[in-house]
Image 1 (tube, rainbow, N blue to C red):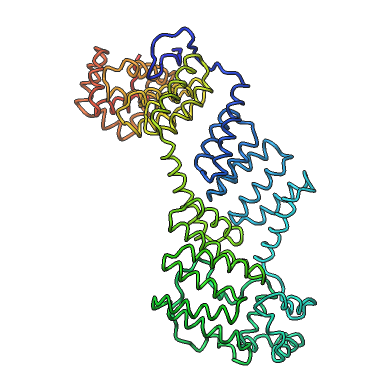
Image 2: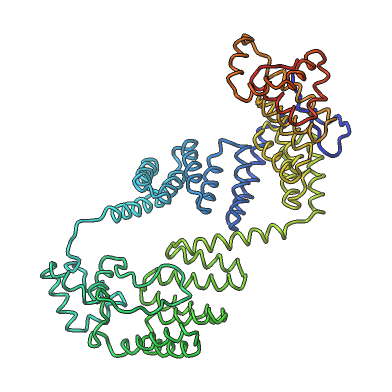
Length: 577
């Protein structure tokens, strides 16, 4: 039986209009133009950190222009920023399929693989991309970075780090070791390790050795500071036999030794919440050793605990400046940026918080800061959504969408309904109207999604079921379509649209050429079918329906009987003609 989409009009303005058309009546140019507008909207959302909005815009644009490689690339970026790396990988792969000579696609895919920990695969993708664009700087940098990570993961053969040609220069440029070079005992220690690297194990009791190794190898072996944001200092622990001994007093210049003592006194006061005393000791430590960022960070932590966020941020800014000047570890700088972000977060200034969290992540990526950044972005998005809600503006966009629909301009109708939904996301009719547009554009999956939103918002909304049934019917999924029409009849038994749809799907689904005995034999292997067919009441109902087909409508009003009849139809045991 032929099926026309025109039997499902809009919820409003249902009057006959000669300008209305059935089927897909938009040109390719119109679809691409609308896809471009959605892409631009997605780009703005991505730049503003509204990741869900960005992904939705890109998805709708892809539905209208499925061969546009840029749309998949942009959606891959949005997925990656949200931490959904598997989806980012899928979109990046599709980007390469559509545009094999485009470097950005390879960068996207390699980045997704790297986030998933698949470093060797990421390396191959970078190499493959460079075959197409050998001079691409992004691919070159990415390849170098991934090669370093692979080497670090695999480990390198041991070589004597104290025999490096630039040993002295590297130790002079790092604030942790610079002052020790003037100490004769430290110089002698270096010479011993240069001559006899096998002495390294016996020298590890000297804390200067571990710090020197950290500088020479490029990462912190002592793990002296946690990567996560600190607002508390660690509790004092009793020394154990395995604990690293404190440096001998003669190993440290007087000013640094006194600064460390002041820092310890400040920490003790901090733990007791004696913040004024803690600040005095930290200020003294800073005066004695102004190049040590740790004291500035500790002072900022005190202000943070006191809720004096402006002062906290000023100390963090000083710490960043001192750290830059003295080539401090990037993790320390990242921590200062993160604390600034946390201070803004506490004040509910989420835009500023996101900005500084991102600066922290640029310096050093830690899960806690990333999670906090995403939390702030989510709050910002919700604030923006609520601020944008305006039922009056929604009605204007809805009316404009209705006019476009009646003219057959479905892409522009979709655009107006999208804006109307943003302005009033709780209006169930807007999703229903947009579903009608998607059906006209043959975008049945998007239509089904909107119908499901209708049902979620208002479970008794008939159009949600009938429009979903219509979309499923066009997709030839007659069983599911019939189920939707049946649910509509349960809500409104007199709904002609639902009953006719149910009858059509039954005829289309169960007109079979199978041998009746084969159908019966297959059906009776189902325990549920066996139970139904042995039920005396159901056998009586089936006999009644056979004698008087009009009795079907009365029996379908009973949900239990309707379910059993539907089951028998699903297995092909009965058919309604």
